[in-house]
Length: 295
Image (cartoon, rainbow, N blue to C red):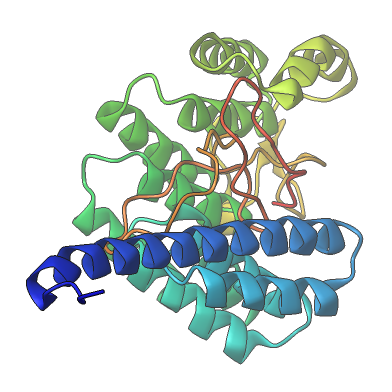
């Protein structure tokens, strides 16, 4: 039997190569998804060494996913390997320059090392890159609130709401600022506004239920802090910044598609819950997969 001429083999070979490449990419993406899921489970159990290894495999299988890189950095951060954590957080930002969880994790790491000014500068630079996004203002407000600058946090959150007036995370954080400073009616209004724009926020529903009891049991504070970021109550300063036991997450629950082949160019990642707990790329709606916040 006579062999087929080369010109007829070339299209067939091209199709076979393309199919093989797609199969390999899809297989790698699925492997990455499963490794990330297992890593997340171990992270939640406090098994950070195992989680780190699984996140590393997820990154190897899908290097274009900023979530996986963030999770690897978060596990290294938990282990106290701050040098590796910072490098991988920055890698995630190279993959997705607007990846909010990685900005949050990196700012938290810098703050833990006493590099507050560097963290502020990083977030201010991000704000310059994305002036019409609420995300950098939310992260800057989080950092300001963590260091006792309550007035600065309020200003940043108001700016976030000027850029995106219905942003549920910005309104929730502004409600927390008002709650921390004893402005109960304003806190209630902000929490309700946030829930109206994003209903599935169990933490805010819980706060709305407990605010009346908190209002009866705590003194009223002024809207702005005293010297050195310390709140003022009845004309005197508190010796410590007032905070709540369960901080509001800096970003919303994830609604992500099922795993697919890695893209050649990175697209902005969907919003996720809190940046410290590792998170997964979840199957498609109807239900998000939120993780417990750690602040």
